[in-house]
Length: 538
Image (cartoon, rainbow, N blue to C red; front, side, top):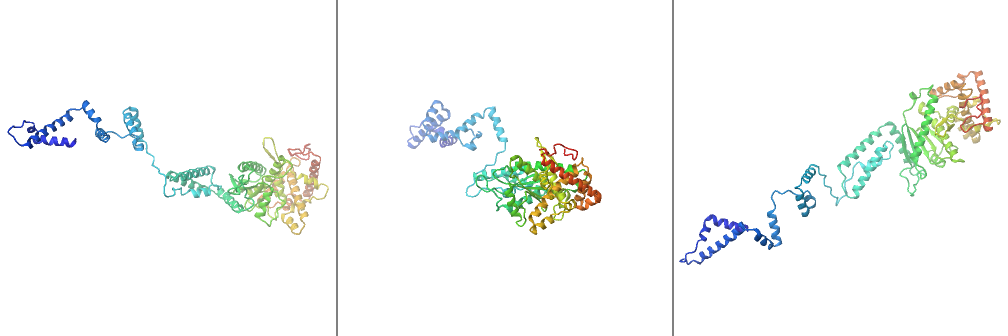
């Protein structure tokens, strides 16, 4: 058709078309001119028909076109300035294109198109083929430090969430996004900043050392599925406390750590109230973590001792405090006749060792050295171990201790130590007897020091409404400041006659306690039931 139009236009402009419509002269005998004239007339008629015709005739001819001609004709009729569909780029659907063009005429769809065009497009992600998907560079370091104690609970949760997201991307073969990489770098930066905190760094150093040393030991237990826990111990931080709990199947480690911290905080409050009136504890306290290691039971505790120091004999110990690294080591369970007794026993032990720890924390002195007097160290520790917990869960310290039963056994059997010998006794003397093979004698002597040490502290604070309380405070201040609470400060505070009087009164009081215990006059609250005038246990 185009070519035809071009031919028609060319003939008209040259003037030859008008001559072709004139009647041929009869005298002409040129057949070519006659044929040419007829062809011109026919061509002019056809062109006129397509230019001025149409209507039903055009539609009729259109129906006769082939399928390819129809497509070509439709393409020519498409408006040159028509807009592309919102869906065409993503779907390529001809039906949706047409539908979108029709809907685009409405105001609602026009507005929608404007909103879509204004929104930034998400970068197109393609699944990775032929190589490993890109990962987060900082993720390996984050997973390595995730369980360190200087990593907060919030940061730990974010690390775990980042790891889950990265694993999902890797499984579905996507490259991680730049946003994920930046977020991981921020987490790493925050963790490194927290590591510089002196308290957290100290707490984490011991935590890492414990797990490293005990990984291949019997202390590394299996979970309910039969697989080893990731590490033998998990950590819990509540400044200044750092708690390390042995992992096992039958305990909620974090819940137990929180309970232990609550108990030790109660002990600390009582300790400060007891000594804070005559000693500036805040000025003297160490700037370090108060560290506690909790083993599952007594058997695990003994295993720990054998691993830590095979040459040290702690077979008779229930728990202990390690002055060198400031670590209190205590079992979570003791074998007793009932659960209630077991809990009371556990608290007694941890309060005893916790008092050693607080003396070290607030004084900087090693009160558990071989040549230090035992009575004050063990006596004060036993004083705070004696406690009563009421129905509301409040702990009352300084109550009757189980050591009173030892006093009853010593009553009338000449097993008590004279006061002067008792005050001079040291751990070196006990260890010397052991080395000489006098194990029973060493054990009896040590038990006497524990029992009489508790009784002397209790006596000086409670006898006749605290008659000797100020003298006791002066002795303890001397120990805390100079690390010596043996016989020397007693001789300084009590001249000879006063010392002899003190010794007689103390012996009478020991008999009084032993008699009350034998008669069943010690109440469950840890006080003497009749509350006679010899003491004020309340």
